[in-house]
Amino acid sequence: MRINLTEYLQDTILKHGDRTAVIDGERNITYRNLDKKARAVARAITAECGCLNSPVATYLPKGIESVYCDIAVTYSGNAYMNLDIKNPLERIGNILSLIKPRAVITDSAHAGRISGILSSEIKLINIDGLQYEDIPDASFFMERLSALIDTDPYCIINTSGSTGTPKGVVLNHRSFIDFMSQTFDEYGFTCDDVIGSLSPLVFDIYSYELCIMMAKGATMAVIPDTYSAFPVRILELMARHKVTYIFWVPTIMVNIANMGLLDKVKLPELRLVWFAGEVFPTKQFNIWRKSLPHTGFANFYGPIEITLDCVYYNVERELADDEPIPIGKAFRNTDILILDEADNRITEPGRDGELCVRGTSLAMGYYNNPEKTTAAFVQNPLNRSYPETIYRTGDIVFINERGEIVFKGRKDTLIKHMGYRIELGEIEHVIINSLKLVRNGCVVYNHQKKEIILFYESENDIAPADFRKAIGTALPKYMIPVVYTRLEELRRNTNGKIDRLYYNNLANEKN
Image: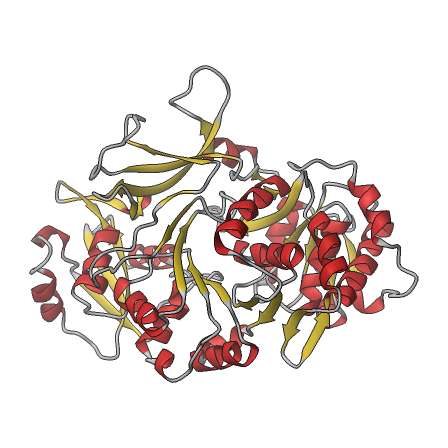
């Protein structure tokens, strides 16, 4: 039984020590050298802090250094928390004040910026000033880790908070090991896999990519975030490095499909594509599937409070362009509860309910934030016999006639308008997927003026009258937006999702 993710890494070093671990531009590093660097940084953490089961932050760009520093934090027996170097210092300061990490790991290029907001209790570890010789071997750290158990924290991932200070979601080793046990068996990862790593360091997808590396000896090919503006360069990098697997948020995939790039750059080695984080418009998904007939596709679902994902759907049948891609079924050792407004469980097809989750995949809660934790991680209302925690996602789903779970929208995007209960996500689906009027869109509601508003991406302006006429063929009059705003590109969060909160605030500021 393995209880700590570094235990997988030890086997990988023995079997695949000379294989390439990370490709970062023109640089690369083997597993043996990656491990050596990680142990050197781990030595500095233990010497400076002497801590166990504490948060240790990293403030680095994504690349070789961030990989071995995150592994170093795990070696030291602590939980890594990656900070986004692009975030304003005020936001980073808010995170540091809440989480209170014992140290921040950075390099000379970024030390000056971060040091000005560190309190005296937070150590600054500059990797450029460390000694990389005479490093303790792995057994030194493994003995130190023997004091830990599998439900100790592995990482902390920050997610947006309504108060302006992000919430630090705590994920443990056990939940990652559980997720790995199913996905590794089902999808056949090996040391020959090459990961096209596009997700930011602050996203849970990146943490899973680290797990594939540690457990299987796969290679991570880092895709620079600047390439998002030039998607063809992403595909060219994937072709050059023979990428076999990607796990992306759909936004960039939609752009690639709309630009017809899959016809221009061939990806014969790409065997597996996962996507998660937001709805993938089926029309653009079908372009990917048609262009890559040799590739397997899977739709994953799960908020950050669930380790990686709790529900998945392997796409093995044809889907019409106007049919939503199901999110499928629960992972093994995870139970999905679909609850109505009275907290009764829904099992029959067609009825909407809130998706709730129980199982080892649940996060441990929000770090230093008991109030938020208590509000989101609650007692299972179906179990009055003993304590059992579930997480209420706030997402509305239903079961289709095939027994598959289908995502419908957010509980907080359900509105009452003109006496009708309306799901704003349904309006988006009709405009984007069914009628194909725009590339992307975000529908929000101005509660004071009682107006439904659409922000959209399109090559050209579309007259409001034309919008209303087209939408009126598919939706009742009370569901038709009254305000339309065209943008070159919708604003996204760090993880690539459309920033719905921003547009909701923007719409309601226009009162």
